[in-house]
Length: 60
Image: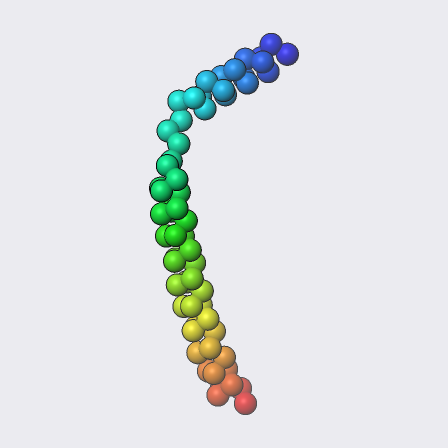
């Protein structure tokens, strides 16, 4: 039981040393992820259209 208490004390102390990102950094990171996901979705959609047409030509 004493080890569990020590674990939580150490965890709390470690969280005090963490450098948390600012709101602006979080927003910038979120925007970057959204742009990447949208761009990748468009690429996958275009590949899907191309392969769909290819399959329709090859396998009528």
